[in-house]
Length: 391
Image (tube, rainbow, N blue to C red; front, side, top):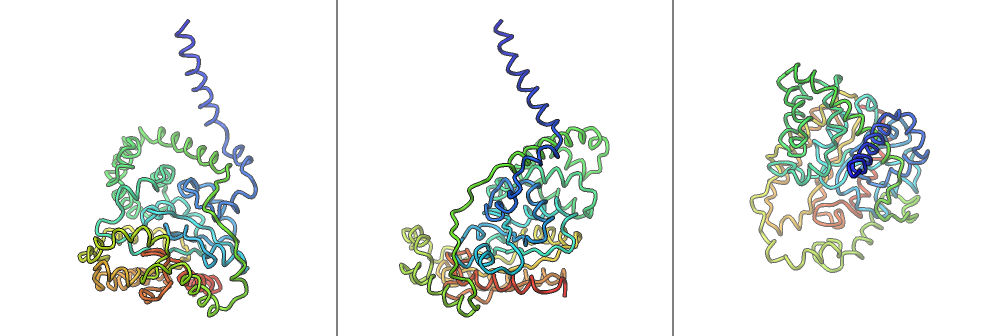
C-alpha cells in the first residue's frame, strides 16, 4: 500500500514532465503577452539574457536598438539611454542586454545563438576596462551569466566558422559551469577531437535536453520581471548636447558632495572606511595583458561573420581614483590604444571616450558610467544610428 502511495506521485510527476515538454513551442508562444518584448527592454532580466526567445523577437523588430554591456546598464539616471531616447524620439527604442559579469565570452555565445538575425543589424556594445584583468573572466563572473541553452545551441550551430567555434568551446571548457554539465562537456570534448562516435551517441540526448531548455525559456518569457526601479524624467527632452552636459554636471555635483573624487555619495560611503588600505594598493594592475582580448576577438569574429553593424563604446576608468589606488597610467592608456586598434582592425566603429578619465561627473563611481558620461554615450549612439551602415 505504501509503495503505491510512494510511486504514484513519482509516476504523476513524470507524466506531467513529459506532457509539458511535448507541448509544441508554437502553442506556448501564444501565451507570451504581446507587450512582453517591449516591457523586457529595460527589465535587465537575467532569464532574458540567458534565453533566446525574447531576444529573437527583439531582433526581428526594427524599432529596437540593442545595447550590450555589463553592470553599467543598471546605473539609471535621466541621462541613461533608456530614459533619454524614450523622451526624445529618435526612431528607435534601446533594448538593454547584460549585467555584472557579462563579459566578452558570454556575449559571444549569445551572439552565436542569434547569428541568423544579426545581418545588417545595428547594435551598440559598451566595453568595460575592468574585464581586462590578466586572467579575464573568472568563475564567479562567468557562472551566473552562463546560458546552458546558448551553449547547447553553439554545439549544434553549423553556420558559425568552425575554427571560431572550436576556440569558443576550448575556452568554455576552462569553466566549472561547463565542465560540471557532464553531457555538454563530453560533447564539447568530442567536438574538439572530431570524435564522431561520441557525437552520434550523445547528440540525441543533448537535443532532447535543449528542447527542455527552450521550453523553460518560453515559460519564463511569459512572466514580467520587475527590473530596476526606474522613473521617466522629462528634464532631458528637447535639450541641446551642451545643455545636457551642464545639467548632468549639476546633478553630479549635487549627488557627490561628500568627497573630492566626485563619486556618488552612496558609493563613497562604502569606500570611505577602507580609504587608507586602498591607497597605492594596485601598483601592479594593468589592463594591457589579458586573456580577455582573445575572448573579445572571438566575439568580434561572430559579429563579423554574421554581418552585424556594431558600434563599440570604449569607456574610461576614473582617473583620480585610479591614481589614488596607484594604478599606473601606462596600464590604462596601453589598454585604450590596444582595444581601439583591435576593433578598427575588424572594420568596426568605435566611440573612444578614453580621453575623459579626469572629466568630473563622467563616471558615477569608480568604474561605472553616469551623469555626463551617459550624455556622451547618447550622442555617440544617436550619431551612429543616423549614419548609413558601414559608411
